[in-house]
Image (cartoon, rainbow, N blue to C red; front, side, top):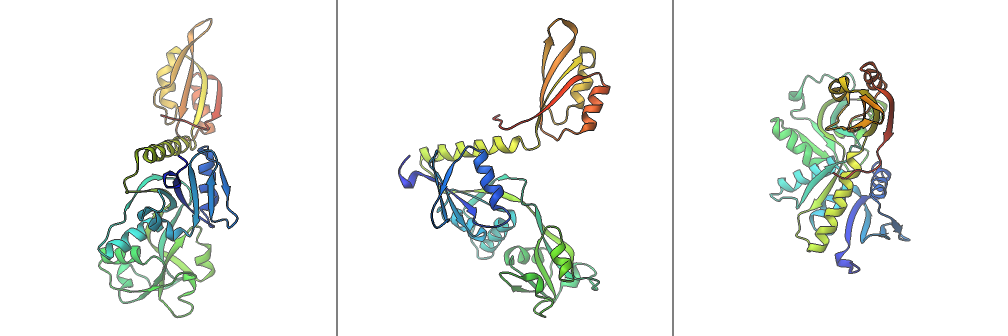
Length: 300
């Protein structure tokens, strides 16, 4: 697949809180890249898969316009773009295919600390500064609130100090930026995390097969997040109880132990975190020789 038109393109945030996580995820899928001199393009060395390093708010548009086949971006950006297009009577030509469990934050409305906020009705006839006009417009409309939306592309948190707005609607992670600017979180508009979106454009069979292969690898990497492989010995009589204690396990493998008629070996992939309390409960049920190993890759 040396034809440039048949190479897969993935849009990734150039710099920001999702960049390192996104690149690490793709590397864990076995993809290797060589970065261009302008640092805006990464050429796939071992598969026909290239990266475009761009502004995060450009990613949904690049995928929707079929410039890129896949994109890794925050759900807040995806939903804001989707709502903005709907407000213009259009639909985004992309779909969400995976939640990635990193880049967690929330889009929230915040106001002055110690203010007289008494609920959503307090937002009627006020000015709210935000970079997320689409999401905020939809949120206010859903709750029958009439407010003036002031668009700011950055430094939203200082708008109340400047007298430019009464409230803000912005991303919140730890809340430290709000506190530093004398603000407090009052309403959550959207819980967000990094997601993968895919174009809705029809691809050639070869290109579609490659996209499916990449998504299968991504699914394999995501499945093992916090998963552990447990090996242990157990009395046959305690097998049912021990199966119930294995966190997130479907059907463990049970094997006879050489030279023992009353004990078996159990191997299981646990899709939930395995805590010390889990091991202690298994031991109390009769398990022994417990071993917990990380899982690197897995295909269903």
